[in-house]
Length: 373
Image (cartoon, rainbow, N blue to C red; front, side, top):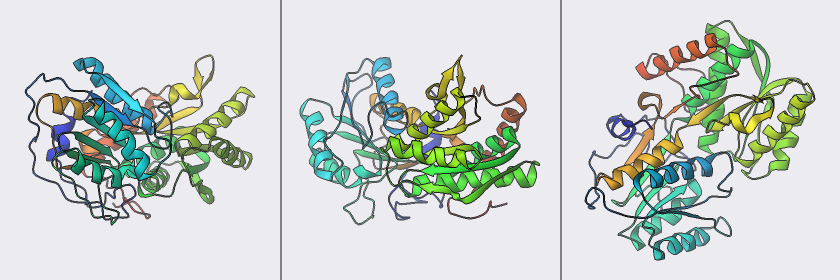
């Protein structure tokens, strides 16, 4: 775990371009509350850690899984009981029901992965004042997209465009030439930023580093959900059939379908690469002899963020009332440190680009457009 992740995130200036997933630009971007914990438990106090899943499952190889792995690891490290519940659906009422079930069972630290929890957490933070809530990729609001982060809640966002940029540059550097594609889930800000960052990374490598990887408009598709595995497989197949060499799949379960299609093709001796998302998906792309079709992954260190919020609560330093952004400057995003499918040369070059992001020498747009130079 990056031990300094929280403190760095708190003191780091919020980027004005960061748009909350599902907030349509009104998620409090650019605003950072003063640092300082609001928790009252003494160090070492016992509490129980819960999580309600979003549309996907706990083993979705992406967002839910990343959040849960962070909470679960914190539970093991600190000797805390953990539990996750899956709602019957994805309505506010169904989310609130499971939040209530966790609370009634004594789980008063609750993680909520995804923007769909925004209105549910808005109500829960008032109803359960002695509970602590961590919402990732969202900020509580009453349905008006006007964030209200109470003292018992932390809202966490990530600079997906920076992560996408690094993955795009890595893909271009490794493959040198050919065509790339993008499959997104729902067309929401977090997914869009992955796409725009990825395209900027590819363009940067083409303009500055001599690569020739291209992305055609028809190969940028938003499927419209995060759980349609069959649709993801079909979309990936269509792109690969048209000659696309690598597909960046930022789509949850839809991305799992794209991974499955690439594995099928790799087993048949064909070239088919996938850029994973949110977590390091290398293991999910293994098809034979330890080989994987995951070229690299555009990571949001969700597990680190979830883990560190539990750690902060245990130490009485829960940063309640704050909106945190995890980006390159505080090591909140990136590609995996170990990349079996990337050459040493590519890895070294991406490290250089990461350093330039940290220093501000390279700035990636969080909106559709060109790289800010």
